[in-house]
Image (cartoon, rainbow, N blue to C red; front, side, top):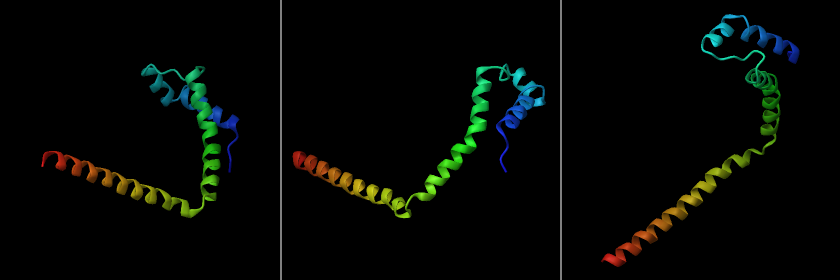
Length: 97
């Protein structure tokens, strides 16, 4: 069940206005009601559920095998780096010994 944006905005106005939350924020010198920071908070609150839904839908479409790719890449890079380290140590040992 979705809540209309107008209802969310009204709830935020009540919550951040004259409620204990709003009074606490004002006591900390944080003004959100009728301020640009409040607009940002409201936009995030209203739009975040839509972004989460879109993200979840796209993650569900990803092929499961793609999650194995980072392990493969890390293994390749670690073996490459360990090879470089071995060559570097070998070079130093040849210089000094």
